Length: 217
Image (cartoon, rainbow, N blue to C red; front, side):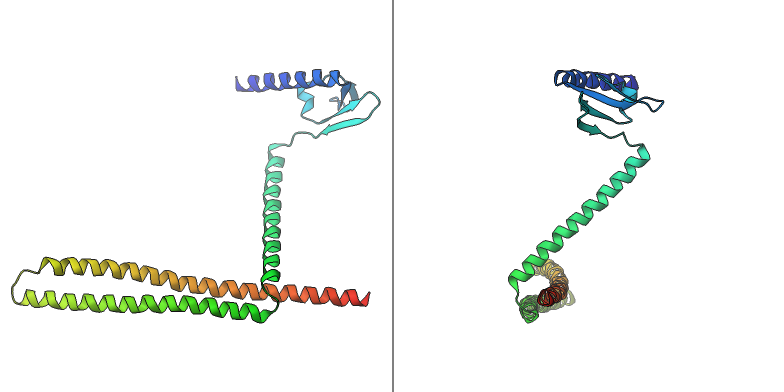
């Protein structure tokens, strides 16, 4: 049923194209199963998939419709298109990166200094978190000692002490997570500026070589 519907749809589409082509004085040129090229005001659906040309009576080619790809050819084509898109995207990324580097920096030393400033800022945040974590752990330790005293005396632990302990444990967990992220960020910043420096040096060398070649000419 689906196959019949597809064939019927194809026939209706071709009939519509044929009427439009005739109205514009256009015809089809296609190959028959025996390989003979013919010109007609319509084209059989089973032959259209092999490709054809839309022409005028004087032989002028208006449009060339390529043959339909096989399933295997289509997979190869789609894979190739995906790879070409990936290459185009990478070229755009590199172009934008190069433009940004040349706009922001005039020498390698500028990148090194910018990287050092960025790392100092991250280091300050790391030290703040480390100090906070130390204070939180010390407060929790004091809290636990107070609870232990009450336990040794056989007294029930005070609710405020228990609530404080729970709150401190939460704060410690959050600070440890933040600290781990900041340390990870530091590595990312370091790698980013190192990559910028390497790319900038490559660009500078290319520019220098082009200038030398220009002078030689």
